[in-house]
Each structure stands twice: as structure tokens, then as C-alpha cells.
Length: 515
Image (cartoon, rainbow, N blue to C red; front, side, top):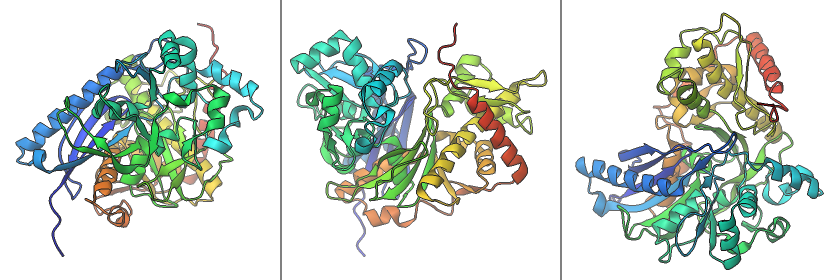
């Protein structure tokens, strides 16, 4: 068998709090990487924004540093880097000027809830209420999705209104913003998105994979501002001058959770849980569109080529997971770094009856309550920092359990091994708590950052570095995976789940509390 020509694949991983660039060899070994955090803006309670120009700069820095590291280690990256894949935070919404290339407002982040009033208004206007567009796009009317953020920008930002009128406005999620700038910006930049990111706008028909004309007319959103929709694995365009890498094709693009599905090699009937700023559980339902009756979303999994079959998924989205740990660090000062939470939580054997529900911006799946706000209950004079830390870790696991329960009901899935990934899974205690609360094993891969790997796979697949069979052959598992097995008594597990349910109910209808 002839040996393959050596090739390297790059991956841009643009997340909610940080950006990374990773360079992989053909054996998917990382040969160079760099990561930087960027600023989170909170102009008002419930509002979250990013500076789009800072995100661009973060990508440039990460590209340059990763290239330098790989070159310093003796790799001929300049000659052998064959393609770049891209994965990004989904739903985060941006409108910019086609003529100047400048944002007309900060990017409104996926977890932002400023559109609550618009959601209530639309629910009353449309005959189907909150689920009016579900048959078309798979999504309920919610603050989560891009369409509502576009409406807010049109109603509240004069520069956006004017640019739309004159034809100078371009809309995109972060993938679109990056690709447009990478491929030339005001000098012929390509205005595209991929099917996975488009499926999170509430504007794409998940059957036709095109922008839905009836939805656009109902919401009064101009189709002229929307990007072209492409598959997850195809050559989109080349990176132009002004970047640390030039002339290299961008050949893969996926929303972060869809990229993780590819990175975990999730085929039909397989699910993965990603623990990052939020937590996201997706189950691949194959070419079948499954409608949820238990609070989940119907969405795209991936489409690995223009002529490839479309895989769909059921998704449970959790707004606040690792972000609660950041809150302990940045807002309360209980820990100095995220990794300290495990050591602090291990100082106690339990949360001491404390239950923390991080409904900072409402609750997503399976509750969909934007009137919810965070609570911490069960506090006594006995409660200390360690109990709070442990309750925060448990809150992530309880929320994942709620989503998986809904998923099993919708798809008739039986409990089995749960694949996990994402930065927070490095925490062994978190993974053990998850196994205990699920009552089933949790499997953590050796490479927990599977979003970047999925983007690299998509790009490599498009240019022939890998074949789809090679990517999915392992089933996303290897001998170096770590398995966490449950060791909590069933009676105690049930009692804890009941107490969690009571805590969740306490969060409802708190959005209008007086200051």
C-alpha cells in the first residue's frame, strides 16, 4: 500500500470565551497550538456581547503562534499545511458593513436574553405560539437563536436599519464573519455559512437546507443580508493576504457542537455531551428528522460534502455549565483559577444539602424558561466554600441528566456509555459525579478538545487527506480513553434527583424581581 503524502491540517476553534488554532498531522496528533481568551461584555443584566474585531485579532495571534511552535519543533508547516477547518460558537449574531468591513454593533452572544420581549410578542402574534416555526426549522421561538437577535438589531440600532435599507448590511454568525475576513473582506470576501450554523438561526428550512422564504417574510428579515449556505466539508475559498497563513483553502466549517460530533465519530444512534461554557448533548438520528415531545431541539448533525447525505440530530442545550465555574472565579473570587474547583470540592464528601441552579440567563432544555433566574438553596450555617464548589459541579451533571432523560424518551434510547468532551471534562470529580447521577458509564477521550478535531476532519475529508470510513472506523473510542463508572447507591441517586427537581422549580418566574 502506497504511503500517503505528508500533510498537515489546521483548525480554527472560535469559542465563547477563547480562540484556538491547532495544527494536526495525518495521525491527528497536534504539532502546534495556541489559545487566547478575549473580553466578555455585560452591558446590562442578561446581556452578553463580544467585540468582533477582537475576535479577528485573536485568530491572527493564534495562527501565528501555533505556526511558530510547529516550525520550532522542526515541522515544515509552510510547505505541508494543506487546508484549514473552522468551528465556532453558534447563534452569536453580527451585522457589519459590506463597504467598510466594520461591525455595526457588537456581536450579540448566544446566551444573551435581551430579546425576551420580542419573543413574547411573536408568540402572541403567530398562531402556533412558541412552536410556530418548529415544523420548518426545528426550533422554538427563543432568545437563543439568531433570528431574534437580528430583529433586536433592526429595531434598536440605527446604523443597522440604514445599512439594510441601502444594501450595505451583511449578517452572519461568527463563522461567516471569519470566513468573509479570511477570504478578502471588503476586497471580495466570501459571504457564506454552513448548514449546521444556518440551522441555528431559526431561518433555515431543515428539509431543503435553504433559507425559508415564508419565515423571512413573517419576520420581515431581508434575504439580501443572508450568506450562502454550504456543506460542512468542501473547499470554500482561500485565505488571502493579511493573515499569518495565505493561499491555503478553507475546506471545512461546522458549528462547535456539530464539529464535536464529527470529532467523536458519532454515527446514527450515538450521542455526545460537550462541557464548555454551556453544555450540549446531541444524538445523531441519521437521515431521519425526529421531532421532540420532551423539550429538545431538532437540528442538523452534519453534511460532510455537497452531495453527502444529511445527518440530523436531537439536541439538548444547557446555557450555563463551565460559565458557572468562571462566575465563581471572576465574580465571587471563591477560586483563583478554574482548575482549583476540583481540589476545593474534594474537601467535602457531598454538597451538604446545597443545590445550585445556574439559571443566570434563564433555563434552556428541557425547560425553556427565560423567566428563570439562578438560585442556591439548602444553605445552612454548616455550608462552606467547598459545598458551594461541589454544588456548582453537580449542577452541570444534573442538567445533563435532565437532557439525556428527555433524549431517551424522544428517541427510545436506552441508557449506555455516554461519550463526553470539552474543556471541563478534564475535571475527574465532575466526570465521576456525572456517572453517578446517570447511573451509567461516562467515557472521556484522550483528546478532550474534539471540536477542533472535527473541523480538521471536515477540512481533510474535503481535500482527500482522510476518507469518511477512516474517520468513523474507530467509533470515536480508543484504548487511551478513560471510563468513569457509577458507584452511588440507587436510592441516594433518586433522592438527589428529586431534590434537584425541587431546586429547578424554585427558579421559575424570577426574572422580574425588584432590585
